[in-house]
Length: 274
Image 1 (cartoon, rainbow, N blue to C red):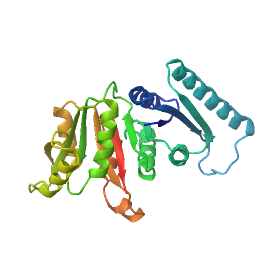
Image 2: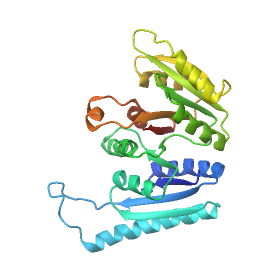
Image 3: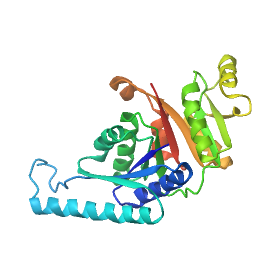
């Protein structure tokens, strides 16, 4: 891993995400790329096209430069390699383009969950970025204490070949020194669904029995299953994968990954399947 991109608005949620990024950077020797995208506040939403006085826009820009400069200096004093980007725009759109431009290996983003109108907006931004980017993205809840990833679970229903995603996850685990990565099969519905034995054989051939640590949890749906598991097990990181979906599919299908992004009690790492 070479570059971790961290969008920040200098909030508590963003600061907590930066702590997680620092921990990863220390282990992997990656550089941290801070990004701030400032937007123009709109006083009257009935007239969103009203132009903002130039002096107010300049104040916003200067505040962003000062904030990023302070964070950069702190990180450099701690021995991190740091770069930064400050531009006007919406983070949910601009951060995806920036991640591709600098060829980032991981995006780490803070989220406050989904309680209250402000938090819903923040949570929606995180989910929007997650859907658009093809980069691995780690969503860090504001309230969690992220001091290590010792116990990791990859959440799946084991219905299709996840070799490509697991290859990335195990490589990340090797860089981070993680030895306890479990595949958590969530069994949903009224009838027990046996695990695909052919799929398990594929995973065994790809990674070996010593890496495929399988556990199963029951739940009415995926969220209930993982909630039960988190209540009864010590977990530092939940990992999921998501497919690129068409616009209509995103509207009419419930996204388990989006649910976890908004409500997870621990950091959530999402890999993207093509």
